[in-house]
Image 1: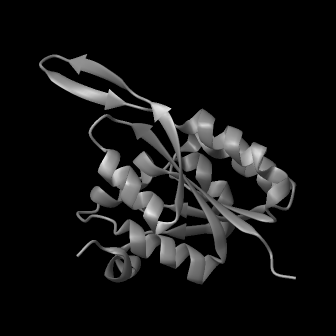
Image 2: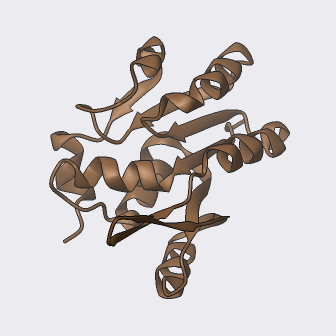
Image 3: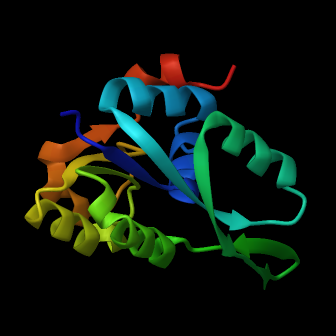
Length: 163
């Protein structure tokens, strides 16, 4: 019997991690990659709800992502406004809500705040892969999961870069 594999994606960490490498991710191709290479049947994308981004959200849903929204806050930093929408709690919560529905989880983040989730999934035999968006900048807490880790790097750029 084929294993059910679900992906849980920290969208801001993914987006910023790839952009820090000087390119933009093609989310449609990324979904194909997750399906074809890792057998992912369901992709949860955790994203901040920003008014005006409705078209982006609709496109991501058309690509096959299930969007889980986090309300955002606009924080003033001098004259500049920064939008914050930390999705960590939602990602952990939904990975536990869905726990009985998948055999393996793919977690996409470089954030060490997910160490406890990764440890729990590993101990339960449910950690499939950890995909780290930037191989040059990620939490040292994730090094423990190196045997599960895949990195979005120069090799993947050719396939996953937005044209």
